Amino acid sequence: MNDLLNLAMKAHGGLERWKQVRNMQAKVTLNGTLWRIKGRPDGLSGVVMRLNTKQPDLTITPFPKPGTAGHFTPSRVWIEDANGTVVSELKNPRDSFAGAVLTTKWNELQELYFASYAFWNYFTAPFLLVLPGVEVEEIETHNEDGETWRQLSVIFPPGIPTHSARQTFYFNDKGLLQRLDYATDVAGGVAAHYCFDHVTFDGIVVPTFRRVVKRKPEGPIIHGPTAVLIVISDVSLS
Image (tube, rainbow, N blue to C red; front, side, top):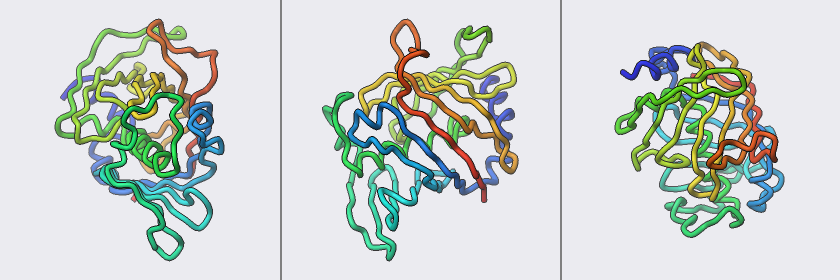
């Protein structure tokens, strides 16, 4: 196994502990300029996300309003009312973003798709990097804000819904995730995603405060607007 990936997984609770976890639940609040640009200015406030850690499958409650819940799988997103009746759905949701640019507005099912696959990735990292077909390679170290971070270049296979096929993960000397870079293919942006406040929940370490900013070729725009601000709490595992 890649040495850096092995260090990262140990720092986040260890692969053996992760294998014991089938479901994860957390309270999530997110907002930022991306949500306003996409015509969803309220973001998500205090929603509960529950995910299957073994395959892309996530539910957001409430979504998009009290009394309804949003459900995600790679091939379908749908909204159910309190009785479990499907009130709207979108099959092959990623196809609906064809031709989209940064200023393209989202409907509620597209918002559901984006938030769901993104957080499935965030909650399962770095362990999802050992899934079949994921290619990882350690590249040169990176210096930022007086620290030296090790970088892992990652190529995801088409079967994993994620922001972009090529991403870069940055880890500190302890193996904790500090930053990840990606292009948001379905949102039309290029981002640097910073991770803070790592907290241990039942043996698994989760960065509970995250800030996503625009990234240009010369580097992230740290002092610019926050594209997405994420606060995570009340994480439970089963």
